[in-house]
Structure formats: C-alpha cells, structure tokens
Image 1 (spheres, rainbow, N blue to C red):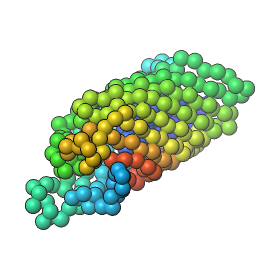
Image 2: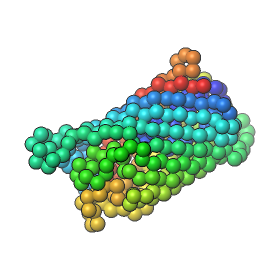
Image 3: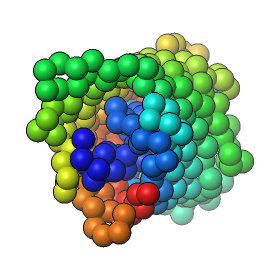
Image 4: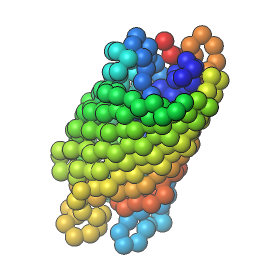
Length: 292
C-alpha cells in the first residue's frame, strides 16, 4: 500500500476519540517506527431523544444539546505487526434551557472537562494472499477510563454529563480485504466490559473505502447493542443515566488529504440512525494531523 494512503487511514482512528462514533482501531497497521499525532475538533447537536416506546421531540429541561470536543490522538507502530493507540478528549456540552427553568431547578446550561483516556493495542497475527488482493486479520484490546472528575449523578442535570464515568475493557476482532486499486472493506466485532452500573455491550462496524496516494475516503456503518440496562423514565430508572440501555446504529463518511511535510487534514460527518436512550445527533469533525 502507498505511504500517503496508509497515513491517511491512520488519521481516521481519531474519530472514535473525538466523537466516539467509530471503532478505535482500523484495519491498517502503522509499520515499525511510523505513527501519527493529531488534534481534532468536533461538534454534535440534537433536539430529539430516541426513547422507548416513543421518541421525544425536544430534550427534557434543556430543549437542545450541543457537544463540542477537542481531542488529541497518537498512534505508533512498535513493530510491523503491533500498534499502540491513545486518545484523550476535552468536552463541553451546552443546553438551551431558559433562565427561568435553570433558576427553578438549580441547574446550569453547561458542563465541561477532560473526559476519558483511551489506550489500545492492535496485533496482526497473519494475512492471506487472495490473487492480487490481501485479506488481513487483526485483534485488538484496550481500556477506556475516566481521567477528569466530571459527575454523572446529578439527576436531570446529567443530561449534559460529558461521559458515563465508567472504565471499560474492550476486545475486537478485525478483518480487512484490500485490493490493488486501493479499495478496501473492513469488518469488525467486539465486546466491551464496563463498571459503574454501565451495561456491557456488543460492538460492530463495517467500512468501505479508498486509500490512495493523494486521498483517503470511506463510508461506514457502526452499532452497539447493550447487554441489559434500563430505559429512561421506564421501570427501574432512578435518574442515573449511565445505567440505561444505550443501543444504537450510526453511519458516516470521512475524507483525508495530505498537505506537505507530513501534515494533512481530515474531515467527516456522521448521524445516528436508530437507537434508544440517546440523543439523535448529527456530528461533524475536522483534524490537523502530523504523520511521521
């Protein structure tokens, strides 16, 4: 695979840290001694909540919510078959509640802070040659744990919480088919073990894209199925939002182009399609990347 195409692909792993929309791991390897450092800015907005049995128009108390995230990302190839990936976001959520509502409930329209540190490793045990194409198999594991002191137990104020304050242990299996033309197809599945009453979850993703010498582009579809949990305002719900059943599907598209001297820029869009106990948001992101 051509160098710039590979570097472009590395950038897109940033998405999972900036918007937590995609898997933290792609189907490409850095190669020994190669890596990337990136800063990403993203924004999401929603004024509809996917609930059970009926969706809600307007976010309770806050009417609409906007989430802004500034993330730092780093990836490095320890060897040709082993990569390490790190991400850390600073997040600010903003509601649109009136002053009268805020004063009556004693709430605020913003919450902000450092969210969760993510550390992952990825290993490529073997590849299969299929004519002129390659079928690569990878396994990945990682931990995501709160680094900031944000709160999640403030009742309805926690609609604006910047995370679920849970530590998760994640395992992923990845398969990627790459063709000589630069077109690739990646599928992956995994499981996430979580504490702090947050339900464990099945994870999945499929991605179709092109990785060439001067541009990288992809479209993707991802989802999560929670293993248990309660529904907001349903039986067993006591106002602790991290304990809810957050199940969803989400789709998006990304593009990356190199600029000069190892620098490049990327951008993308994504949208929740279905779900429960989650805001139906549309998100956008842009990144500045240094590849080395």
